[in-house]
Image (cartoon, rainbow, N blue to C red; front, side, top):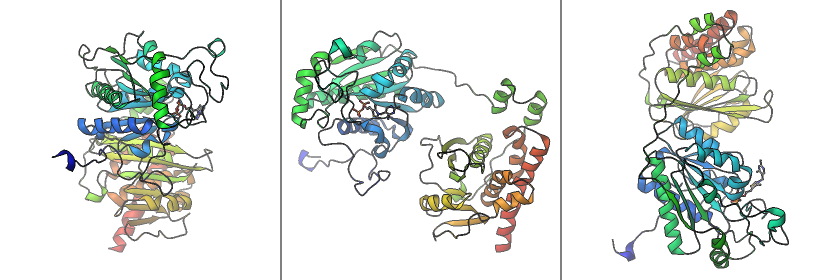
Length: 490
Ligand SMILES: Cc1ncc(C[n+]2csc(CCOP(=O)(O)OP(=O)(O)O)c2C)c(N)n1
């Protein structure tokens, strides 16, 4: 292709349209003009596309200006509390060692509130790539002093300039981490001109390649512009990096042990939930024996629209919404599917709203949130109003007709109405409405065998015999209702 006809396009690792971004401007990022974050995003996205690892990448969005990273990357995404990105990245990487986990952090996030987090993750040699965006200031919150603010630099909290006698010296994170034995790759680069952007590109690629090859902890510190909080413009910001930042933060690869390191092979511990409960003394040995009466869970033939479901369960806190998800995910796991369960709590536990996402699929689960569910189980009216909208066309809506007196509005989905709360009340205990919902789901989809699900109840909810019996009757009631209703419709 000649240079003139070269088509510039977004890498596929970026969302084509930033559909999760609120407001009308879904074709542009939220960053200020001249900000370095956009350039760094681009370098990461291009690397993911070229290495063909978008599908198994998990981006960790921090707190800071890049808090909305998940608007942009077409990868798995986790948004985390301030400074906790390395801890969450550790969990994501350990839980799925084949994932490529990238912790993206600002200097406030990584070097201040999360200073110990990064030290410990680096010291454990976690198999993660950290992209550390050092703009010498807290960008998002209005330009306060960061651990990397330069001596003499004016910020809103150092209006006379940072005074080392009072506020200490800038933290040089790459050099600090270089004291540790475990890290594989440590580099500092800059965005102050194009040749250095290219070096940044190489360094980011190296760090990501290391994670792909399971070579352990790799970190790239990128000196990056923040014209808004430095109260300047883009070109002046780049000049400031060159003249002021680089003398304090020298550029270069400080450590590269990529070729020497063997791929990490950590055992992935697998422990049955029942075993955990037994160790903690929450259930007796007899209950364990009852719980582990094992069956042979054989996968069932299901209609294509019910295979690999991405499920959103929602309702009031106290309706057992999270338990519905736990039950479905656990049963799915028993059939050998890859599953995930992600709870989302409302402001209060009881009386507030709660929802969870469940994925049950052949392929490894990347993103755990069911943002475009194929199934919605709505236990109350606000949940139906909120989640009916996001069902995929052709999706399945199961709703609790006892509490939801309105009809669904979509014409392009299938709908199963079941009086879930009433069926539970008829059994004498509203609480078992969650198990009625589980029964309704398997009745509507046929994904699981009813007897398989029933056999798992002691393991899922170990406890008193009466409660177990009640749960079993509840699952059967939900199932029978939905199956009978389908039959009577013909
Ligand atoms: C626990 C907690 N403490 C404080 C804050 C406020 N806060 C939000 S962003 C931020 C600093 C962000 O600076 P940095 O990590 O350098 O990222 P930038 O915004 O410059 O990209 C702070 C202190 C918060 N959100 N949560």
